[in-house]
Image (cartoon, rainbow, N blue to C red; front, side):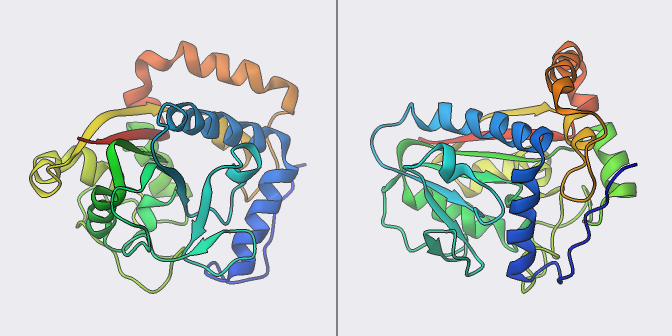
Length: 250
């Protein structure tokens, strides 16, 4: 019998973010998946010694526990983050950051172009943005449009309504900025270069149950699930539910 997690707060209530964090930490399958994604962030961040490391949208995660030197931040006032601010206006000095890390955050930013301008300003030359976000694969569109509470509109505009940091979103914003409107990206952000957009993880998050339900498989089968995903990696553009985007300041 699968357990359903019921959180008795509005989605935009800070208590919901903290509840999500507790669920992630208590579910071994989901926590391991987050660790794998974090390790990709950390491996890339550690290549850059000149500057500080910043995570945006940290409240629901635990990156600081495995990468203590990261500066955590969130738009919500939460006791488990170092700084509270909007990604559209960061209280960070010019050329100060070696890396900016984000997990399922970009598609919640009302005006992502403002964030990208801020990243362009605050990153050192050679610094990176690395983010993991929903992917615009055939399977992704099927899952997100039918079984997820957040909208997925790959034909939508380049911003979303402000005011509700979690309930307002468009999961297709990464695709819109970094794939569909690539020419606009190159024109608008001349000092940012997209190094890669890698689709991945067709099964593992769904099997984990996310923050809504218990895992479909026991934790000891995690490695088998990841091996299956690796075998299917040639079809990741069709099957991947997530994408990892790396952007460098040049």
